[in-house]
Length: 241
Image (cartoon, rainbow, N blue to C red; front, top):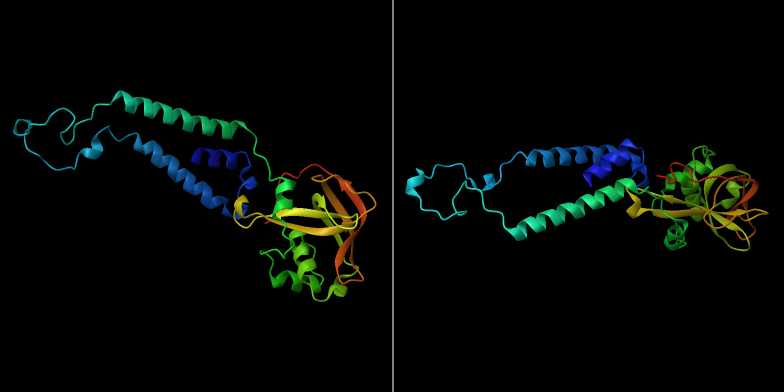
């Protein structure tokens, strides 16, 4: 796994699994593991049984083969089979991980993790920044927090946005623009989405860039009225952090 982590980092694909802010830790720990593994091969077989003290001359001990301190234990046939089998399986896992291309989490997973509640990663700072108009750096995650927790939706009516995400099913014939937000790694990925009103609804899972205006509806909800919708390929970095 240390080799896999380093390989993903060298090929620029480690971000598909962990937050880029944590890559330095994962890489440094992987390097230490590899160095330790290589160094372990320098330890002679049976050396771990040698306690480093003098047991006297060989003549003063009557050890049967394989029982004395500092002696190499004979390798049994079963031990050899187990070692070769374990090594082959471990090597196979590493090779498959290196050869098979890493894939981002799917739209189906995002839908299954969308429980309709405000995102746990969302803080009050997102709503505060949005109320001041400082939304230039906002992604789907930040806007989803604003949409879910705003107590004054009229304040955001007329805000222009340009957001990138993938399509998930919405309500009333519209669709949701979604993104998976990662705090540390893909295990804690949360689904964030904002409703989009558009003339054409792309297929579920399709990546799009939406340009439009935030609108406050009559029932107090916020939605994005799309003025332009561009179908795109999945970005190199499909997550938000």
